[in-house]
Image (cartoon, rainbow, N blue to C red; front, side, top):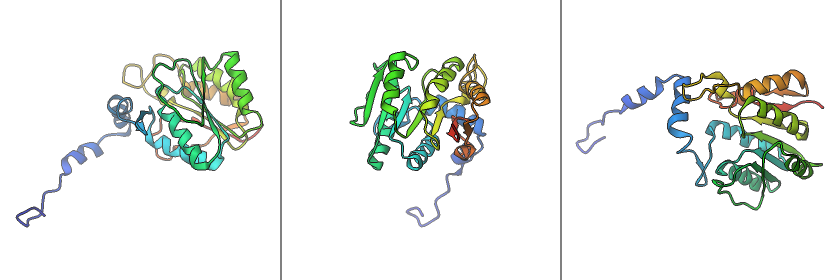
Length: 227
């Protein structure tokens, strides 16, 4: 009601325009207008789809990992997010792997920073040492070109414990087209995932993790179901 006692008009127009967007249009809008500037965790930029982040906390709660390996941390917002989840559980560390720390801002006692490429032997040796005998979850959010994603899958998938996950981020780029705001000119994470799955029956796509539709990780929630 307004001050004259009459019913105030409902401001439907703006919402009608928003709700008329297709899922594809909204994803392009999120990529162009939101993810790089507006998505933050505890004040730190976190280049994530918030619906995927909700799924991540479900997985962390269910798996209760002792080590979360994050390949690619950028500003460190997602690193802090994972560390805070482990704080709630009261256990575990986040191993942050990144080749460049110039923009990285996360500071947390549960975070172990490894600076270098994810394929470097010294980095791999250190990660394997930190994961030995532990429950491990791996998230690939580094170089999104097919060759590097596949390399990371081959190198880090053996660290994932049965019942846990290797999450391959941003396969969405393979479902869009070069120049449309999301698509790449070359093959990316989804193509790497499909090739990996063809030769690794110990991993399977957990489609229940895509139930909110607007995921950046199509066929990217890979659950370890066998050796």
